[in-house]
Image (cartoon, rainbow, N blue to C red):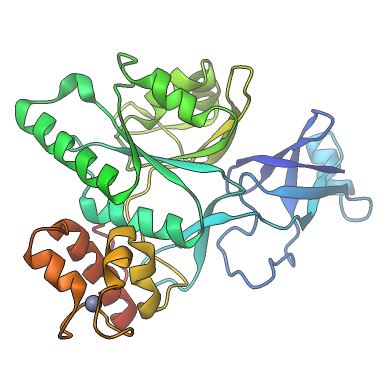
Amino acid sequence: MHGTVIRNTGNSYVVRLDDGRELECKVKGNFRLRGIRSTSPVAVGDRVTVAASAVRGAADAAAHGDAVHYITEIGERRNYIVRKASNLSKQSHILAANVDLAVLVVTVARPETSTTFVDRFLASAEAYRVPVVLAFNKADEFSADERDTTGYLMALYREVGYDCHLVSARTGYGLDALGQAMAGRVCLLAGHSGVGKSTLLNRLVPGAGARTAEISQVHGTGMHTTTFSELYDLPGEAGGAVIDIPGIKGFGTFDMEPAEVAHYFRDIFALSADCRFNNCTHTREPGCAVLGALEEHRLAPSRYASYLSMLDDKEEGKYRSAF
Ligand code: ZN
């Protein structure tokens, strides 16, 4: 039986079979993904093969009142997006697989999404060849300063080459345009906790909240907090889906050589064509076009700072939980 993983609770997975049935599945203990050390080998969005266990499933089957199903194989991934699992961890956490688009929800305040976090997310998505759009949320509650900051950031990221949307998940402002960008595609919905991801999800997929509330833990704040990843079909004729993942605090990058880092910053990469040395690290070399652009205010200092922070990771093997 073949299907798509639509929910990952950490202990088990829900697979939607190609005939539409949904099955709760487990992963066998000895199951390992080739070449990937991950806290969880299977990700939402994965195409998988499922088999019912005939041998050791009997006791479990009695407990569950049903046959026990196992994921026995993961199909080749078109792409996936990964972050480091935890502090100093060598393990990766696959956020989602086979995605057409990542929507990064950003707020300039309550909570603040730092440009470092945005840039790390963008660089990782570039590395895994996942296109990103930025959704600047909470437009309905901006102060004058916050409106200015958001305007500046949207202009900055558009200049770098990213589609930016100003939205209010609460009022629905800007969601038609964002919905059009997402229609027909499998979209990862990412961002810090508290940026309004759940409200946005409920706007995009009416009824998603009821499902979330059923299985979510109720947090100390009284808010429903997603603690698992789940795929929801987008309504509308164009189809597509949203993969909602738990809020991300930090974004340690993975599998990136120091010399590669600049490749994933579109603006820095474009400038680097004019550096005197082709192995330029853009940190101190004479004739560096990146440093030149920084000095002449043609490169945003925040982008360069993010680039340096990622280079620093590579050199010292650090994980920066603050970002
Ligand atoms: Zn350079």
